[in-house]
Image (cartoon, helix red, strand yellow):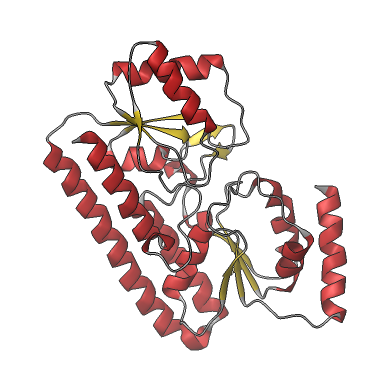
Length: 296
């Protein structure tokens, strides 16, 4: 990490003496970039550092990324150490330019703890919770672009309404199933806030970070969970290597069960640019449709 910060210092010096295309608003992930695009006027440039299918937990910025970070006017990130290896760099950049974390809008008491002063960073698939971060981001952008403050507020209000509508629609769909308990199994533990919000029992084979290793005990306990809950579907994720879930399928079969692979879910990254799933609401509806189909 020290080497990365030294690279940042060198890139900053290079940026100041070498003409390059500036970046107005640089966001770390596709999820954060979607939030910025939803509430900023369309003529304000928003760029995502990590494209779709990129895992932010293990992402290592290359020199061109460091140059983008050094030259960006504003930087927006998720926070809560989602960007793992970039955390120290983002803190360093915050000393010289506006850097904002989506999680700043949330009180720690409503976060899911995973260790001492450490919280699960996957806050976006609880759409009600994410709405709070949007209002915080709106305040930040209004300060940075006071000439656009009324439009930013109006766009944020409209977007929060859309998030709340999608939230209520999924709650209605769950109630329509008429089942007391629902469960799901995915590649890593990215859906705890989602599970808490919609009363779904969630099990991830790996921990909250895809950098975490899983062992034989994790595999066997998750396979037994699938048998006990009578699940017929397990889910890979678009930004996570599917090998672990493939091995889990074999572990279930060894216990006498049988599962199929559901449509891959979006977790730490959204869909390809230009698709409906490139928005958070689109990815959310993709995921919930896949889950509802598996429960019917």
